[in-house]
Every structure is written in C-alpha cells, then in structure tokens.
Image 1 (tube, rainbow, N blue to C red):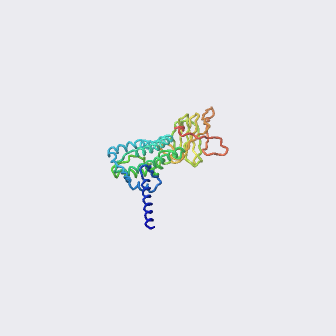
Image 2 (image 1 turned 90 degrees about the vertical axis):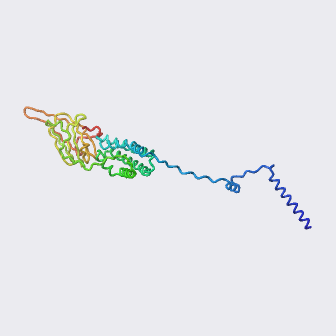
Image 3 (image 1 turned 30 degrees about the vertical axis):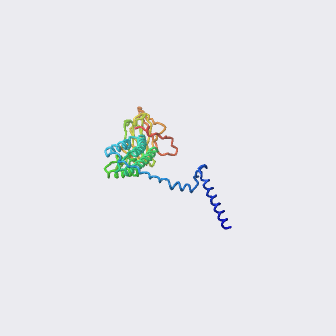
Length: 329
C-alpha cells in the first residue's frame, strides 16, 4: 500500500507539472499587466531609467556698460521731461495735466526697466529700481487727483508734498545703490522750494489798468481765506487786488464802464504762479457792475458799490463757481 501511495503521488505531481507547462505555452495569449497591478508596476520601475535633472538656466552677462547706460537714459527721458513740466506749470489746468502725464510715464519707465537686460554686477539693484518707479507713479497720481479737486493749485505746493512722499526717497535709494556699481539712475525729481512767498498785504495790486476815473468799489472779506478781487472786461483783468481774510478795502478811481467781478481765494500765495498754492477756489458775481460819472452845473456824481465775499442776511449779490481756465488774467 505504501509503495502504491508513492506511485500515485508521483503521477499526480507529474500531471501538475505538465499542466503548468501547458498554461505557459506560446499558443495561449500573454496577459498585459494592468496599471493597477502593483507587482507589475514595481517590476517596471525597477528596470526604467531615473529622470535626468533639469539643468539650471545660464545667466548671461547682460548689456555692456555703455549700452546699459544709454538704455537707462532712454527709459527715463520722457519721465524727466514731464517732471520738469510739473515744476514750471503756469496754470492749474496745466499742472493737473502734467501730473497725470508724469504718472503715466513713470509706469512706462518702469516697464522699460523690466525689459532691460542689466549687467550681472548691477542686476539686483536694477530690479529694486523698478518698484521704486512704480511707487513714484502712484504718488504722482495721488497729487494729480488733489490738483483736480483744487487742494493743490501751484507747483510749489505739489513739489513740497512730493518731497514728503516715499516714492522720491525710494528712487533716490535705488540710484545710490546703482551708483555703488558705477551706474546712474537718471531720474531728476524737481526739488521743493526752500522758502515760501510772503503773503501780500491788503491793497496789493497785480493789475491796475483802469484807475483814472471816480468810481469806487468797497470789498469786505469776512471769510477765513485770503482773496484776490478782479474786475474784468471780457477775458482781460483790468484791476486785480489782494485782500486778506477779515479785511475791508476800497478800490478807488475806477474808470467808467461795465465790469465783471471775479474773485479767487485760498492759502499760501505763490508769487511765481500768481495764485494761491492750496485750497483754491474761483468764483464770479453773477451780475456785472456798471460805473458811470455824471457831471452837472452843480456837482459831479459817480458810482459806488459795496460787495461782501461772505454770505450776509438780506444780501442780493449771487455768485457762481468758475473754471480756473476761465478766470481772467
């Protein structure tokens, strides 16, 4: 029985071997491993090549020093022209326009700086100059808005406020850093005036072309602002006089004729701009004033008028705001 058991076992083993050999025969299709087959995936990864590391980009030397300096000048030239125009603006309208232009050109200068391939030795300092120019542009835009609403009215006030802002300091710091490597950031920010114009006294005339007659105009400035009273014919100022806040002044010897009466008010008189530097306003009395002189055999009669700049109870003289560009000079 034992020997028979052994023979049976050996036969069974031989059959199993044959069965296994038949399953691996080429007559049967080979199964493709599934991506989810972890055993097959492990086998594949063990035979695949490892990925090669990406080489670091090569940093070039950048522009030559001479070419870089020329490109810096070209990138900032238009901005410098606009900044100089801000400092010499002859009217509030031009001042507002030049500030808006300088804001735009500061952004363009920054974009041009970004496009420059700076020399390797100054590249970090070059990159720090870009946000400094953008900050300068933002602050110029703020000043343009203040000029639009007539909080700032003359170059002197604009340059004083600009000098207190962070943008010019950042540009100057970037320029110093570039200078340490032998390069200059050619942005010329105008300096603020060191001394303010003394306030004129009441009765100071800026125009006095029509003062050989007998007419009289008394102005009471009961407001908290200084003012300039202007008598105009058409768009030309014939008489223009300064009257401080709280003061009353009589304009004598006015020639016969019909005049429009304008007045401007504000703070910080700017003699160069011939106007107020801050918080300026421009108005006109709605009704013109007529001055006549009548001579009879017995006497001479002439026109006298009284105006107040502050509202008064029972007053009949109405006023309207005037665009600064339409104020007579």
